[in-house]
Image: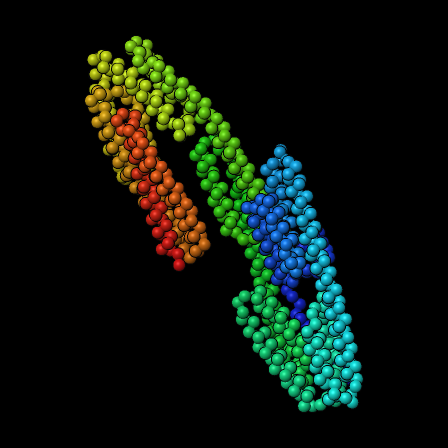
Length: 615
């Protein structure tokens, strides 16, 4: 008869119930493959995270790239294809296909339908290949189950042959080894077949008059093996990686099952210790997933808040380049903050990503439309200014001083009413118009001596403007200083011609003083900007990932500034300063080049600061 205590202890020697996880069933994956590829809790959690990653990855994938991934998956061995691979592949294609449909809603082509049909065909082949492999595995598992049942039956038969213990014991050991060497059985039968095997072994060990020497040796060997597993299970309690600890615990339980019984006086004690260590590992594993769900809830709240901030941007109220640039910085900052959040729950992550992407797309589409309309307006302004420049050039040789002067004045007033043109044309068209005006008024000045008094008055007025620039001091607020400087520039432009011999000298003095004021303001701004940057970097200290991203952004900006500087320096080599217009452009290029050098120096200092913070 079987020992009741033995039966109870062996019934307890089962694998601890894994920590529960919520794994949603994907109705579009073949049920047979899904069942054969069931995930344990830890794998299900990884599947949730990889599904979320698929959303982020799909943002950078194209339909062709997903098709190539499908072909690569089809080329794999069936054993290497997981249900998660198939699910993620289908999700990636659906998301890319959905984005493509949204972008080309009005120009849907037959190529998209062809791509979808080809993808479905590839996915069907992958599923069929996986299904064949699953069928093969199921057949092998059923065969293994029959072999194990046969071994159990033979052990039971040996247990009944009480007169031939010494002769049957070697065969009993062989049967145990054969049983352990056989592969997996259907998951639904695994626990039941192991219990029958354990009962058969205990029946053989407990109910028969086994040779005591052999029996004690077998018990001792089994006890030593289980003590080793117990020590390893207890060590797993301190393992920092709870996922690794849980996986290793499952392996230990499988090995525990394969080891035969121990002496009755040790059975309950050693199993209770092993079960206690297992419970502690499982407790930590469960706590890990509860903490992960809490993080997902925080990420969901954070991402929802970012979507609400995007929705709060008044796109219709953006009526200038400055306003759009400021709004763009806000959107880019929100996008950067979005990347700092981890994944939300599986249910909400995809919906939040779709909502966030739609809002970003809406913003940038509106921005593109605004810039398109603005370019058209600037093109119209350029045409009007070009017409004025041509009229001025046609009139500059006129000797009808009164009529020509009136017309030039009228053209200058009209010029001021015309809006801005593209920056690449602005200086050139202005210089063209200004040269024609200057040419006419220089001729007029030479023709009438009475104009000298006006020119001298203009000279005094311009000197007063230069003196007024001295009033812009280093302690003046930046906004006030800039407003004052622009006001003086406008006054300078309004003042008429000065004596010819003083023209270059007074202009040089004005430009020199103006550059000094700008340099003073730039130095103050650079210092303030460096202080703000130092404070910002101080907040990132300790987070190397953020520091590296900021450094990469600065490196890209630095390279852009260097390229601009090379362009200006190259262009200055082709300009001539022999004329007023040429000299003005050279000076303007030199001023911009100096500003770029200051920006480059500032960026290099910022990069050095980040390097000093990196570990």
